[in-house]
Image 1: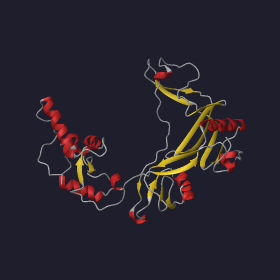
Image 2: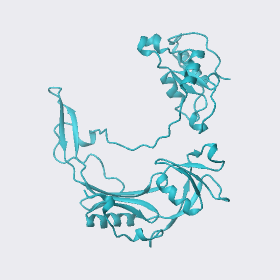
Image 3: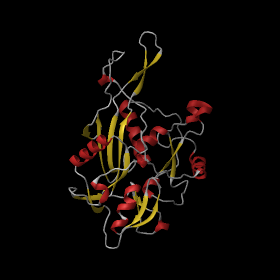
Image 4: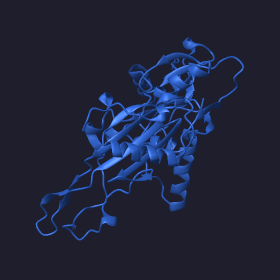
Length: 321
């Protein structure tokens, strides 16, 4: 496939921020949070850094910092929010289909800018797959090459602001993604195509990681002990030496809700929980309290008429204050 950065393409949208036939739309932008305080009081963190780092400064915003996954931006005076609103020209679906068809006729991949949006076209990528399955007679693992027709795709915009995608085979394009699992040739096992389950396709994920203090974790465990403060599970008691050091430490106020560094109190802000209770605590936003999880466990044990299912039973320090 040709290098898309070396291909020149002739599209009307490449010569104007408001191409003919593209309606203006108002798009609401919700930041993922405030920037750390040292950037200022009126600075917000946004995803879609590639797009918003260009769109918003053109509308009077100040770009404070940009990385591959986020941008810190400050709105101009007089702009209220969040959410914030911008007006931008957006190609209608039929124009996106037309761009894909014109690109397919050109027969080359490209990437560039249309209107105010990043855009790229990928021409006839090989989408063949290899399927692993177990032979029902011998139990041996076998593999089968599943040829697929090459797929072309056109994408414009960026997830988190506005995005449109078109995919097609042999120049026949549809809005969105083509159905997956279109196998060419008969299957070699009794499973039908609708029953086949596919895993392992790579997917890019945007992630914000909040730093945690090992010293705070250690002091929390030294105070409460390595026992879940909701269900009394002690990993080392249950699993022996391989379970030592596996207890989780839960932030009573989630770090993501704070959104910046702060001085942590290992006794007042942290509490040991097992992985299961920790998962249940965070199954709701805002998280369940440790007291609510204790009450739920006690209610289940009472309903079942069980005297208790705890691994370790001992008085627990108060974690509510």
